[in-house]
Image (cartoon, rainbow, N blue to C red):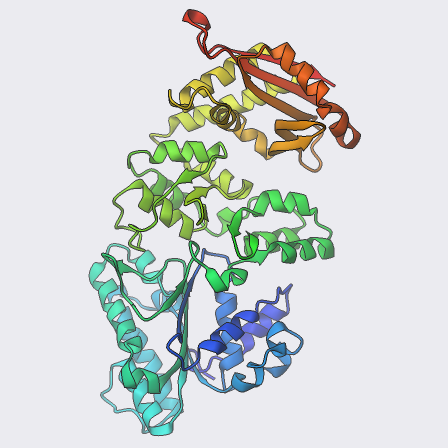
Length: 529
């Protein structure tokens, strides 16, 4: 076994020693691509979404220097027809690009250093097969395959690390891309040498204009995971099973870590966050342990027209439109707010709805990071919003209807365009923004069905929080007292009281046709039940 050639199965053994969610179905997908035109696979997803786990799993399965049958017995792949056909049958080249970056003193030498180290191990395993003066990895691999008939499976972890660590070094990036092109350029030499490639990282493959730098790869990303969607993160059923096994409140876990969604499988959860919650027996923000908010602050601090407004609306729970086609799959070639928002999808800060072509902040954990990231110059209004949000929640809980009306009137005016001001969707968004910090202790559910109708917003206290349930109705051109009676008539209070006890009924209203001092003036009635 080597570091780069046939690294063995110890990495996967270590993974199995912990709490393991069976993702070996990914192996069967790769098996179906071996020695076919689809044999080059690129699968990108955010940090801490299990990329390295998958790479180590694939190494353990294909590496012919070890016997991994016992590791996979009983797992999904062991039930597939392809299991025995490819188990421990190949020479594996495993390239962890972050390792090369950390062990190369001069970053610009990394492409040369990478090839030299892998060729050195190839010479040890196949003495006499590679010319002494050989410095090109693709040629060294071909020499071995041509003389022995052996093929390689190449697994690249953190393939895009150079684009992240040396984001402004275009020369180095192009040299790295040329290395990959040389390995995977197609033709007789590649077909003879390589049985399959699995490449993973955070970013999709770099584009130059509209063309991919590596055109033959089948790409699966956070905007289009397609057949690999079940392996992006933890599925809803997997998280539910974990919660039942480890005595965690599933509803609370969902509010913290859910929010990514793909049509083919439904909800997807951040694996690292769920596992941290299991190990620590505590639900909290684990995102900042994997990616500090300073990087997010740098991206949302870019002064592109409309970006700040979109961020504020998303903090209020709105989805915003995004065009993903112009993104160049790097961290420097930004031309618009759409490029920034698309990068944030791939980094895991935003969840993309492919059908609607919109993005949202996925969950409470990431929303907290956005809140921290806006604590910078140019975002002073967010700091004020957070303080005002704290004050608003306190005013609501103590029943100060006048203070609540004044606060919501201010937020509604600041965050609604003239064209959208007079509709309940606009007012609902303003409410979500105004009560932004309430999400720390409440789960906020829009359009919650109760009694004979729908409550516009229901605030459910999180587990262990001794606060009342709040039902908020959003209206215009009605008087607040009438709306409170409507809440009673629809029996919201009666239905919810059976489950939660203490409630606050909150009615917010304004007259859209009022003139002068009364124009757009909000009123509020708060009733304790």
